[in-house]
Image 1: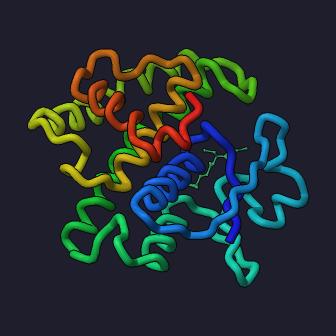
Image 2: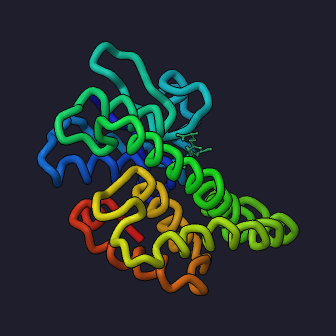
Image 3: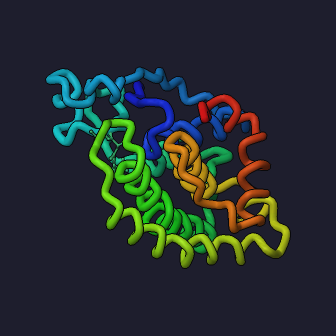
Length: 210
Ligand SMILES: N[C@@H](CCC(=O)N[C@@H](CS)C(=O)NCC(=O)O)C(=O)O
């Protein structure tokens, strides 16, 4: 299989962190990672549009030549395909809580951070939009406060002591904030501590660039 991806972008990073975490814990998925340079617009090349007509990353090319083009679908596919020692586990309740928190983190933190970077300091050179930036600044504290409170019991990772897909997604969003020089967690000491600890993990060290 091949993963078409790009460093620093949140959705590709989420999948790269998931794969790296699984590799560190002993699962070699044999996935070749192929870089598509979004700063050069390669995601809109005819070659990539044939993989994903929406011109986005990541894309997982299966061995039969078909493509999965949504980051979470890719993670769920890999977690089911390589089920031994998988990240989501087999308990329906634990799996559901991990998925639930991942959705909260992506929809309420990672996606708004992605938009925030693009309206304040876009790597694609998009025009600044102070009104949109202010709206996102106003919306983020509710979700960040929720995570801050969750971490206040001293747990090392978002769902306890085992890494989850929510950790991968939160770090992918926070890396993009660092890439875009957006300070989003300075008022949240528990999230800062989580961030430092997560970034020291071997999987994170092998994936993160910022
Ligand atoms: N819902 C998709 C979103 C994919 C997406 O928007 N990827 C971004 C990078 S984080 C991208 O490829 N952007 C390039 C572009 O929009 O031109 C997923 O979760 O994979």
